[in-house]
Length: 117
Image (cartoon, rainbow, N blue to C red; front, side, top):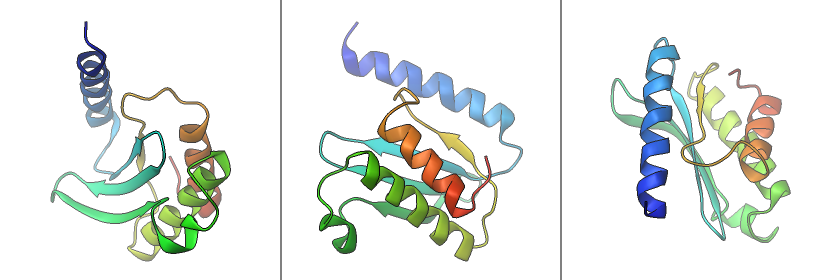
């Protein structure tokens, strides 16, 4: 199968499992590209983004690309913004990506920032 089709299958399988476990909590969604990493806290019931952060922001761009340290900083920043929006518990949506490297660093940073999942 094509790489994008396999990613879509993994993503949909994971989202189905998250819907079963979510219990009304928003999800912390991660998108990882070759150069940058993005995270957003999404309320699927209302269909809106509650908090977001990415390595494209000015204060984080000075640090360089989206390595593990930058991903950790993004996790802390999105947690801070989510807490200010009133969100304390989320479900982690890693998308089609494996839970290691930058994705794991972002999750650890969000936990350090005060989110629970």
